[in-house]
Length: 313
Ligand SMILES: O=P(O)(O)OC[C@H]1O[C@](O)(CO)[C@@H](O)[C@@H]1O
Image (tube, rainbow, N blue to C red; front, side):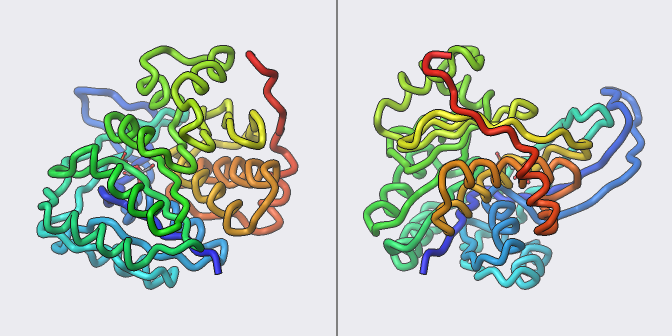
């Protein structure tokens, strides 16, 4: 049976606070707050688990403060394969203003010694087979070089698995060279990758120049503009339904979960992209990554505008 393994190399406890307007350099009072175990791959796994999928979660986790993570994995019946490393998992602060703007203050991670990096590669060699989709998501913790992501992708591919990657900066540059099955940068991360500012008009040409034929599918998330998808099944855009924004944190991860669900359920490209967009739209209406009811999901999917992109613009 097809299954998903998510890899979070740099998880975080997300301390999210909502306020009217953030005033730098002044005292700011938070109106609503939450503290949640998170990190990109863990968020992906949470969405999939809520949609009834069984997920293995792995990566690195600080051994000194893993209680909330362990609780979360138990709650959603995820298989906890995280390699414990000495120290604390970081806390990331998210400040969400009433106009929808979010300021991320991401704290430094634990340090991951080479022995733990090797342990994770060995573990994936054991876990991955040709029914596996491995989602590698998030930044690299201290002590982990960008080349490590290539080793991870290589290990998954060598064992017959599919690999989806959502990362940024040097790790994204390295990942492209290792030819994953799908890459999901956001539009700013993609602009950094290509070294140019990106618009709807120049996006298709830039995608072709960067990815050549090495990455099968590239999905660029673009906030209110939804997503752009380039792959063997054509070039498409999905425009999301209009929703009240509470916090955009986790929307990209929810999108990746939706794309993974498409693979798990062998959905058509259209259904996969529309469902992923609808789930991501729901994600911005709340703190965290809860999923809508089946009925609400149907309604949101009906409101997504799916269209083929004209070649060259
Ligand atoms: O892995 P990165 O890029 O440091 O980002 C981690 C942050 O991203 C999120 O997963 C949201 O996408 C947060 O939960 C977390 O704080």
